[in-house]
Length: 206
Image (cartoon, rainbow, N blue to C red; front, side, top):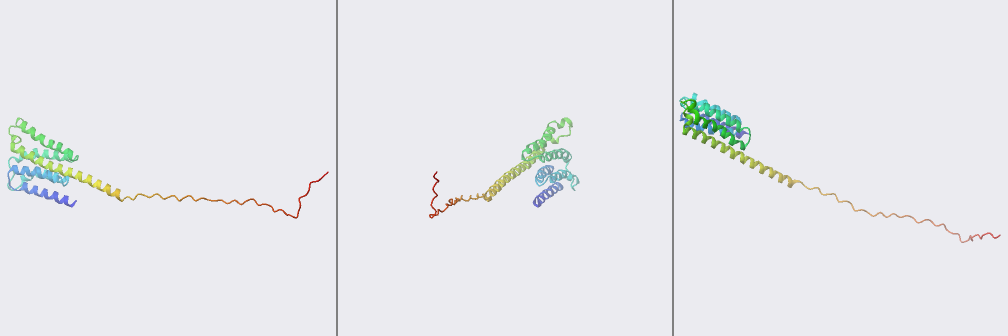
């Protein structure tokens, strides 16, 4: 938990420094999109903080580039939509998050000047390449990290299952005691003794 907090705040601080320091809008756009997605890997609130930091160049000593007034609402909205979709599921929703981010940029690149003739930045090849490259790099890192986490947890569960199976001692059945033969002795019937001095009585004769 502590490492996640340290990593998230470190990326947020790096992003704030990049946006506060004077620089061209291309570098700041790349840092904004990429570092926001990477910071989101350490916790959802870091991603939202990174998205809100997009307005920091307006308060920087050197001021924001003229293109930044178009970049902030356009890329900021797409970035927030990406984070919302990204938080709705695991690794397999990341392609949808990428589409949500890229779709408004590509639509405005094609039809932006028809809506507003001065809206030429979305059609700028450097703008599109920078924003989409940063988005793809951030989501690719997120996909690899989440997939590695799934594999690690699966192996950990299998290892725990094997350890649990090895520590279970099978219960030995209690051997049944051998049946003992019971011999019952029945005494023989007692015979009455015959007195030899007493002759048998003869029968009566009529």
